[in-house]
Each structure stands twice: as structure tokens, then as C-alpha cells.
Length: 224
Image (cartoon, rainbow, N blue to C red; front, side, top):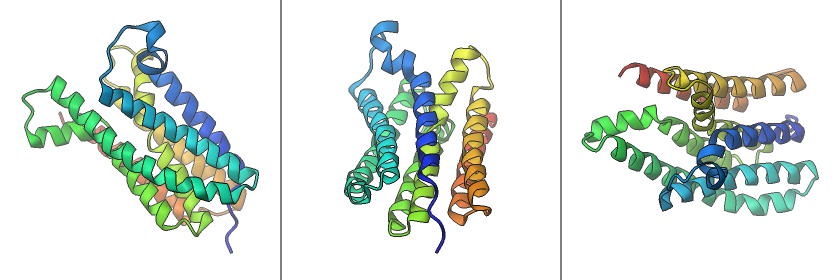
């Protein structure tokens, strides 16, 4: 039987993801009352709450496994499935609403392309990887790796905003977000491979899908 990935990797990954998400969305969401008076729509606020909930849940689940509270981890998994579905649905609606505000005359085809440019692929990839992880929930060595890759897939919007803060007006923010997200996926794959002296297929497919989604996002933006 394949060895189960060391839970510590998931704890470290949760910390990195949480730090990047907070840094990216601190000015516009987490610290908004102190830094700006920008109004948020109820849909946007719900999206922020759901995304934050996922990061907290991922960190909690990693901690439960590390402390061998597997039964509680599995019970919480049901709520995680519902949360993931809500993230994809509300997230897609949030992005589409933002597109319509910025491009009110956009056609359906144009809206779809902008949705890809606005990290829609990463959001849908997150949903697909979570679905795959749930389907393989009885194979922990597969389940955990897919959940890890799903969480990393959520990084582009946060990293893109960090890049915008550091490089205002730059056209390279999407490229930076794709590079950092891809780098995080590769780092997870490398750490996992180093520990077990082989690249697990689930990690290979998960990391490759994250890289592919980000590459397609960059290509869609470059095509404008």
C-alpha cells in the first residue's frame, strides 16, 4: 500500500495559501474598513466569506489528520463538499457580475473569454479537483493530494492582486500570478516526491492541471 503523505506538508501549504490570500485581499476585503470605504456587493462579500471558509477548513482538516482525529476529519468532509460547490457557484456568479459591470456590452462569447482571463478556469479546476478527491475519498493517498492541488488552484486572484500592489499599472500581473501558482504546485509535488522517492500519479495530475489552467489563462489574456 502506498504511504500516506506526511500531514505536515498540508499544514505548511495551508499557511502559505492563507498568507497569500490575506496579503492579496487585505486592502479590498479583510482590512477594507480600515484602508478604504469601497462598497462590496452582497454577492462579493458572500464569495469572500466562502473562500475564507475553505482556507480555514483546509487548515483544520490538515490539523485533524496530523493529530489522528480521522473520524472527525471525515465528518467534516461532508460540509467541505457543500462548501466547495458553493464556492464554484458563487465565485462564477461574482466574476460574471464583475465582467458585466466593466464590460456591459459584452456578448456571451466575449463574456466567456473574459471569464477565462479572470481566473475562471482556476475556479472550475478547483471544483473538478475537489470532485475527484471526493470520489477517491476512500483512498487517502489520492484524496489528500487532490485536495492540496485544489486549494493551490485558488491562488491566482490573490497573487494577481499582490502583483498589482507591487507593480501598479503593469501588464504582467497575470503572468506573475500564473508563475507563482505554478511554482507552488511544483513545490508541493517536489516536496511530496522527495519524501517518498517517487512522484505519485495523483500529485502529478493535480499539479499538471494547475499548470495547464494557468497557462491557458495567460494565453487567453495575451490573445486580446
